[in-house]
Length: 336
Image (cartoon, rainbow, N blue to C red; front, top):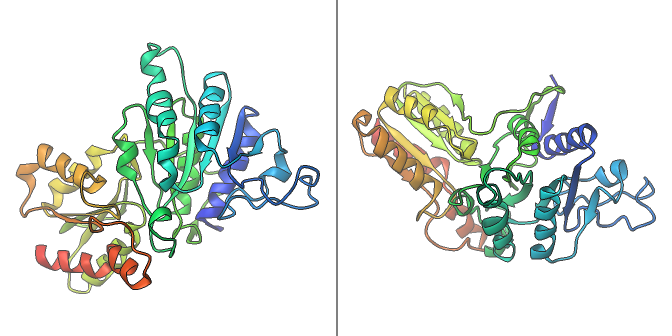
C-alpha cells in the first residue's frame, strides 16, 4: 500500500472534498500566495501556505474557490461564518493557532453559538485548519498548542490527528459536518508518513483509537505525544511491561468509553499532553477518569505536560519544555 505524509494526506482530502462539492471553498493567508492573479492556471503554482499544505489547489480550482486573504483574521473569519450560514462549506486556514486571539469572537460568540441561538434551525458547516506545536524553533508566539482553548467552548468540535491516515479520514468528516470543527495540525508531524489507502472512508468524529494493545499500563497521548509514547512503550516492553496506548484523536466530543475501558483493564494511567498543565486536555482526561473510573485505579494517575511557561526560543530549553520519551519511561517505571 502507498504511503503519504501528513501534509500530503491533508492536501488529498482537500482535493477530494473540492471535487465532491462545489460549495467547498478555502481561504487564508498565503494559501494562494506567490501565484499572482494572472498566472494561477499552471504558469506558476501557489505557495500553499507557510507549510505548503494547500499547494496546487489554486491551480486545480481557481481563485474563486481558493482565496488569499489579507492579514486580518477577524475579517475573513467573520466572512467564513457568514458564508457557512448562507449555504457554503468554507475551510479557513488560521496560519498558527497562536493567532486565535484576533479572531476568537467570531468562533466563540458566533460560529459556536448560532445553532443554539437559532433553535437548531441554522447550521454553520465551517472547518478551521490551524497549525500547533513546539519543536520548530519558532518562538513563543508560533509554538503553542491551545487545544483546551477550543474544547472549552460548547458548539465547537475539536480534532487533532497524529498520523496521515487519521489526518485524511478526520478531515473528510470535518468538511462534511454541519457544525464548526477546529482541525489542529502539528507542524512537527507534517513530514511523517504512514500507509493511507486511496479510497479512505471518512473517520467519524468523537471516536478514539487504540494505537497499541496492552495489559499493564494505559498511556493516553495527545497528538504528537503518541510518537514518544510509542518509543517509551517499545523500550518498556524489553522489561516485560506491556503498555496500551490510547489516542483520543477527537477532543470535543471525546471517546470517554474507550478511555475508561482501558483504565478498567490496566488500573494504571499516564496522560501526556504538550500543552501547559493548567486547565489542559491532560487535566480534563484525568478529571474524567477520576470521576467515572476512580475505583478501577490501582495507582495515582501520572500527568506529563509542558511546564507552565511560554515556549522558549532557546533550542536547548525548547527541547526540555516538550514532554519526552525519558519522562514517560520514568513514569512507567514508577507505576510498574
